[in-house]
Image (tube, rainbow, N blue to C red; front, top):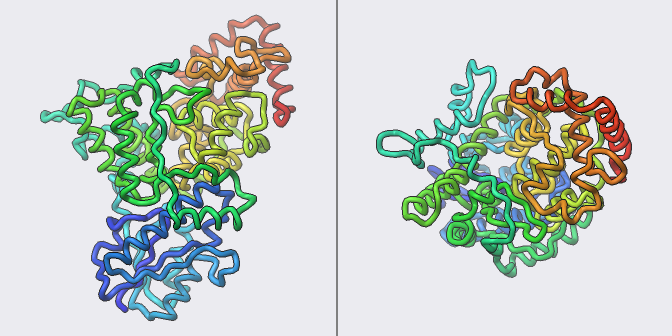
Length: 510
């Protein structure tokens, strides 16, 4: 055998670099569901079903076109519990000239892979992941000598590089780069939100669901109502569903939240993009084509494209530029444990209950629920960054360390000292009231900042602002906030701080 080609669970496309010069007549593919990868965090059961089923379907598709695939299905009693052990066994059985693999997306596994050549009796060729627009070296060159990195400027470079939403004379469509200011409307039930794209599980997926329920009974979430796509064809169907039914309204309502709708106008394509079932550039081009065809407005398409070639590429660049030290950042000195209700949803804060409950049921919540509800609360409460980062990594079907860690540690928790974001994404309950109808159904009063029934977000927000004055008092983007705080009567400020202290001492009971 010439090459033994390892394909990881988030590399489910024939476009990966490991297959660039592959030959079914000379090479063999190995894929494996292993305990070490399935259990290093409390992965949502829907995430495990999605990846195991998508892996099995992809392996079957490879075999249909002539590949020999050595595939290990998950079982807790498998003798080979790690990817390295699977490779070692397969190398001994087949004696390949070399192992070929596309680089992984997590530092944890990257460290292991870098030692494979020494520990395995075979050379190992680790190739660049070419599915991203910016290589690690390209991002590092862009970031060099910049004291602070801003996604907006990097995003403009990616727009120029791809030509997406650019005019023939090199200007952004519509005369501006970013239409985020147009994307903050509250949804009040009209236009009606489309239902999510659904795929009925086939026999292979049903078998995976049964196995996950048997072998991972204590993992977060549920496999009930599993309807994710697990093949390239069905993932393409999910893309078409979004383009047809949700993209036209996505821009206006992308920051909205509703008590009655889990999905609203969001694409829910990130699980497929991040595991390889959809190509990110092709997804963006499809959305841009809808704009040029007059079927979607510019603010919707630009906002969607920005999430993929802007934020997604940007956080990946930061991850590889600063790992592993980045994972240890805790510039605000947070020490509180993650409240247990993050795993149960059992809290009287209705916004938190709804976001966590949707996460438990779906393995998904959209970016405002993550950033401005569950993330905002963790920031205000001073939760240890490592604990909330692990929660996000575990509970979402689209979460991988390279994308989750910078978003959570940097954007949500501001634990990197403002390297990723110029100000913390901290907000009182007024923001949640403005962007949702959650507060109407809550036992707490969003109009009150202190007192037994006052919304916890309000006092915790001002307590956060007050206790971190040394860090943020000179931040020009927070000057007005501190002026507003200082103008409050002393008695009111004292009452709010006292309420905040009480809430911090009683987090598990809220």
